[in-house]
Image (tube, rainbow over all chains, first blue to last red; front, side):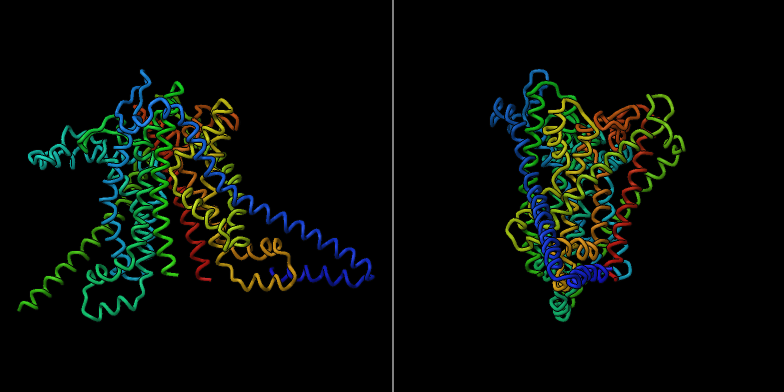
Length: 339
Length: 282
């Protein structure tokens, strides 16, 4: 087919030259100028589309800032450190959502990073070759499941399960120990900060696994073979050869997962319980920035209420922007090294 | 003896870590199985033809999911139709015209940020620029929000796939006197077609499960509506509303909706994967 098209262009030129030379010159010039115009137009079109992507991000930032101005003007810096969230008196502070976002993401990363690295270790070092790709795809399918499914599953299956098993267990085990007893205090609600963190952990697992798998596989086999030749065990090869080589990429993958966890909305909204308070117990209900917006935005009456929610959005955007920028920077570095 | 002791310890540690990694893999796979298993179990108990032929019911009576299914289809299709051309054009610029220009570097970085930006932010953005000026929620706003999510996925795959087109093809067509735009249309797009279609499929998979950006753009609608200028129902929004309701029949419908979305999305992403795999083999 490509050859056909190529011939079409050549034919055009050939048939033109076979008529009288003046006519040929004119129609040829016409054809050329037409092609030139379409060429330029297409170039401008593509460049416009590329610029549009930049404008889009700019527009998102500007619109969020404009929307957030009324709330930020009214509350100032206090917005960030106040725990109040009172729609009736129109008094808003972002501390509880910020706290919830950070703590749930932290729990997610504490669980997902070791789990993801262990799965990567299994996939790259132990797993028989024919099984690698099916298992890898299955793990990545976890990323394909829409977040609302995690939400409904978490609410109806996972939270009641935790309420019956893990949470009473944690309360009884850590109830006597001074610091930990405050972390695991209170009745087992099922829903809450810990449950959200666990669900987030499953959701970010595939991101960490797939990126660390890519960078693990990019480690030059000579390095690994040399280490095995010196008598390293598999774990030692991974610990002292693969991990140091792949470190930057793994950190990039972890940051990418963190960006996801921070911004995840629906799954968390289902299971966090929406309580605007900073609670020291991980079993207590809380809220996150995205869950607050999802729950309250359509019901928000009054400019200050809406504006406060948009200010929360702006805050979330800033946090994820920084995290994702670091992730991209790290991944760019490892890509350059791998070439 | 000391040496063998050290060796035994190293072997033991190795064994522990390898076992742990096996366990971790089982946890990951088990979780996938658990979620899919629950979905199938919960929804097959209550799935029937009614689901596809009737409207969402008031609590306490029987009904189906026809209006959210249609709403989801309309908004997804429209979002993809708006977002795909823009994404392909931007990706074309990055791979063909400005491969080494600083603009491309910036756009690539920004695009990657957009790719993983929280989708609820996109919802807020569309609310600010479309819903608030128009004064009401609408299916159109929902489609626009989805198209903003489509663009970065398509930009990324288009650029990657065009980068893979061998430069000999470009050189050959240029040598035949093909203008650049024609070369891109008839040579590069053709060579990269499978990959670009994959990108669009991935984008569809990504947006068809999105809930957060629809909550305050398209809102929801209890009735059948194809009016883009009015609030429109969508599967994820209905799942959200029904699952959090106290009514048992609504919750059952939420499970059925969840199963429809999940299997549609998984089928799309598996299809996209096989397309990529075929490409690699050829």
